[in-house]
Length: 218
Image 1 (cartoon, rainbow, N blue to C red):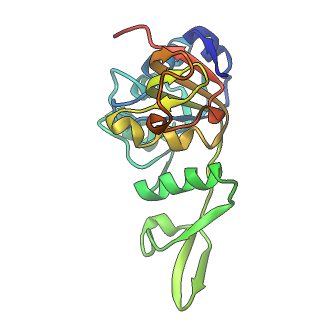
Image 2 (cartoon, rainbow, N blue to C red):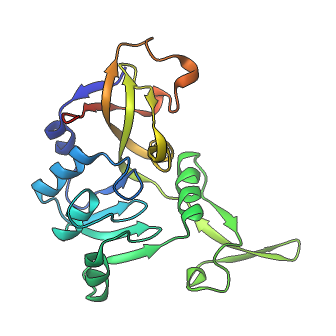
């Protein structure tokens, strides 16, 4: 059974210098209230694994504004010019990944694999510093798995066992990130008693989820 906590208790579990996965796509499907509390607390030197940095006024963008992120592992920066500014000023380390590669690195971490082979990125700056392996006369890059101490995800619905149901683009990164972290906190819009979400509707089993935070806004 997942434990229901409030947003302040959730952020109490995150420390300076932590590695944190944050689900969502741009400003959609992100655990907004948890991320807002992180921004307000001014936690610093974080390594953040996420798809993008959204926009300056909300979500992960607020963490960029507050200069809270030391290293960003993502597939693009979103509509956030401050990410570029901090990167060029060497205030922020950015590791860009092709989007499919980013997802697969996280999946590999959740599956207990060391990494995977892909031809994506060959002949580009993506290959710099990465091992190359030839199989059947075809060359591949070795991409290492990604894990984090904490994953922050958002789901539309949960039950008290932690089973999650996602809606729309919230499925892009949230479910896979929840498999690749030591501690998983899910911000959810609705929490139901166990048994009220049909098994066929469950998109992430509760075995992956440690804590639930009920979103306060509508």
